[in-house]
Length: 175
Image (cartoon, rainbow, N blue to C red; front, side, top):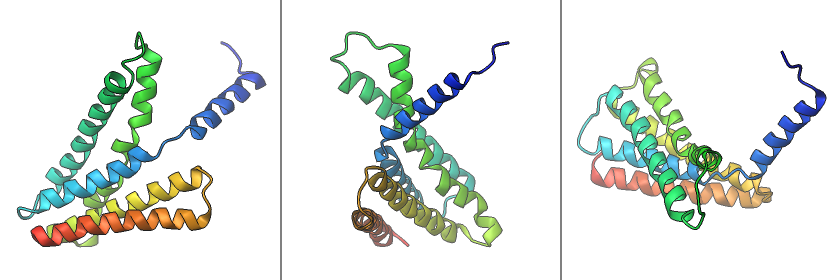
């Protein structure tokens, strides 16, 4: 059995720091917006059972993740002569926030019975959590990029307005 040396630990820390330095939060913002859209679309034709809404949120996130991975690998990277396993895994990891963004609204749907919410209330909770997630991802992206707190607030506010636009569409379609 090989013992870990201090050098191994510093290499691991350097890899983590490098991964954080190139972190891209676009997928999280996009995934949260996608989740909000799924909630609105699912609720537009009447109440949706919780299990179906949860499945829809997660499966839509996974399908869009696959689509984004495909687009990155075969669209943006066609100039590369050969795709290797490391590149594929790198792209899969970079696009994963699209799926991660579906988790909080899915969890909100799962806990909604514990909060005494009916299906209509569940949809509104999931939609609110999605919009909050969208704001959180955008604020994290701005902060990670070294933006001032003012610019972080502007970014979060813009994403709030985008989320509110989705809510207006929900109300216009059917409450």
